[in-house]
Image 1 (tube, one colour):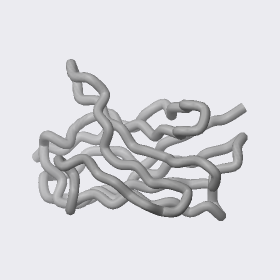
Image 2 (tube, helix red, strand yellow):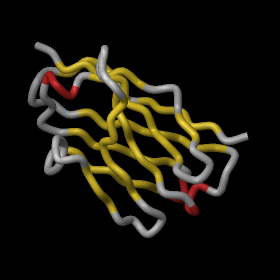
Image 3 (tube, helix red, strand yellow):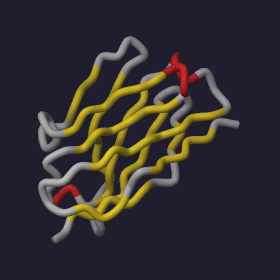
Image 4 (cartoon, helix red, strand yellow):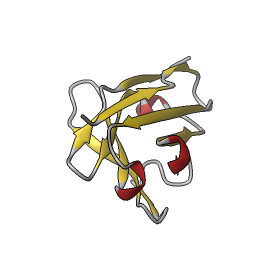
Length: 113
C-alpha cells in the first residue's frame, strides 16, 4: 500500500521560508515523477512543481525563483523549499506520486504577519 505523508507546514511571516517534506512508503520511490500541489480556501487545487526520476524540475510561474523541489531517493522523500513567501502562498500543500496517482493528506502553510 502506497502512502505519502507531508510535514513541515506552519505559520510564517511574509518573506520567510519553510521546507516541506513528503515521505513515501510502499513503493519504489525512485521510479516515479513526484509533484507538489496546493489548494487555497475556496479555490481549486493548483500544480506547484514537479520533479522527474532523472531530477528534471518544472515550476508554476507563480513560484518560479522562490520555490525549489528536490528528492532524496535514498530516504524515499521529496522536499519543497519555499522562500520569499507571500500571503498568497497560503494553502494546503499536497504531494503527489504520478505513478498510480497517489496523494498525501496535505499540510497547511499560512503566510501572515
